[in-house]
Image 1: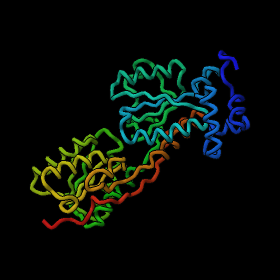
Image 2: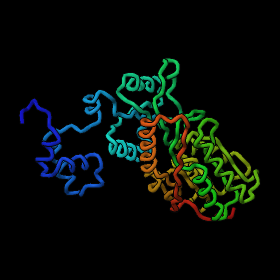
Image 3: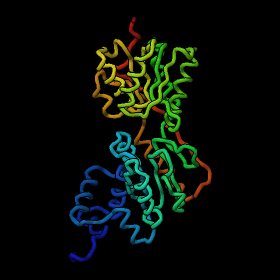
Length: 339
């Protein structure tokens, strides 16, 4: 094979000693191919340098098969698992992904939109919870788009995510079943729709248990470790204290645990804490965090499937797909202490 000639799928099939159809299945639907066969195909691809990525196909075909993903923080534990589902589903349909890490910088978000205006990307996935800042000013119309992880406030962009209300209600009911009646909700927000929905689930559970408002402690928070620690300090300025903390996410819960531990309390004997998301760090804190698990990879698959369908059909109605979360019981919740 001449050095200047690009490798072909036939070259891969010949070296792997399989059919061209098998090579195609190994690339696009690997779960339908035996592991040993996939390994041979992958080795043949590495040997030949065969280019299978969607960007190269886009250039050859004169149209984009790339999806732009805008994320404010690629270090967020929720991002990587969701990305796996997004990328696997995209690849199965012949699409590739471009990742735009905005770092919460509006200017970066606008820069990444150039991929859309130049035709290098054809669809958009938003982790940001808002439309790209300033896209209306520069006249950039958004392509078919879908939001994950955080609904886009006041927008017609479709959303695929966890059922925040149902998950938060599960969390609150778990605390109630352990005997807690004075429960704090940490992480309420006036601008983040996901946080608001989790507050709704908290209220629904406490309403059903007939817990009066004066036994509910609601504090706003940004969903960070520091906001959880700060909430603890704010609560200790009051005459009354909760016996349990329901946190809007696991980062907040870690902050609450850190704040209570720094004050010398023994958890969960003195206070119970429950989180939301089930990030990997939830098992490393002491005590291990009881939390609500998001089906992140499944969310990614569903979101990409909806987006690819939207690219073909161009629907006008906003859609919302909510997946049910699971309660993961560990060691941070027990009955209320006698104080």
